[in-house]
Length: 298
Image (cartoon, rainbow, N blue to C red; front, side, top):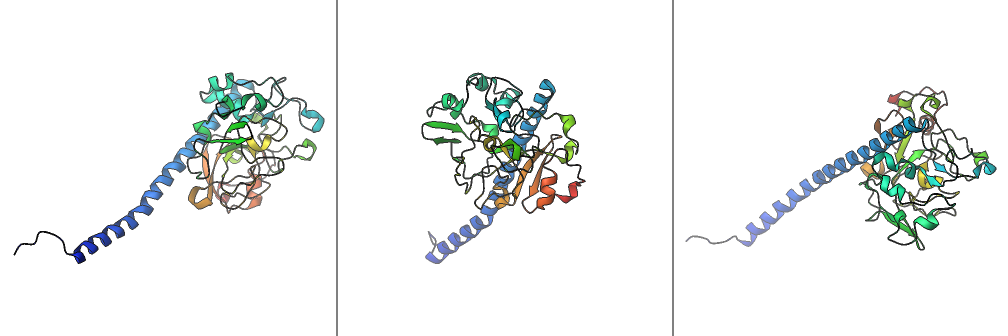
């Protein structure tokens, strides 16, 4: 007599086979997604590096980590762009087709985020795709955070400030990276060679606690005495993408937090292990330390 269906045992076997296949395919799919996200992150950094070089060609210097007049009283250089207050990301907007966004901002008042970021629909709350790493699972969608009634478009990337921890006192900063408060670094100032000097890197938002000087936002429109940590990171601490870490600490969630992407001053983009020696990490973060660092070391 012909059968017209599966027995219960046959059905269970089929379900088990499907479950095994899904179990085998899921890690492969996740790897493909991560590879794609990592590639997009590297492309973001490459575009930012090109923007930095285009800015330098047009202005004879790289943009400041933060351009903020009046900070010479606190040990920082005189602002290279007098009468304006803005951060590194805002300076680069015209160099990756965000001219309209920059032109919509008020930059001629101190603490301009008090004007540019009021409300969820404010210009400062704009999420800029090139500034967001697709692997950062802790980044909100859209990439916007707030502090009270101030809303900020968030960023995954920042310029390298060197080895000194972020500080509002310029007298305690070595100012040995490419970007810091009122910096005005030229390509010719990178004595260690552009291929071995960090320009930009990424940070993770996972386990990013607030501090006394920050709401742990990392918004591109923030500009006050604490805004260096929104625009720059440094190598005073190792990379971290998973455990608790600071806003101004390099790191990512790529490969479970084990690697981070960096743009070097020659425009190249490389992945570096979080297990890099802190000594080597700090050497490649300075522009003129006169250390010998071979690429094989990282």
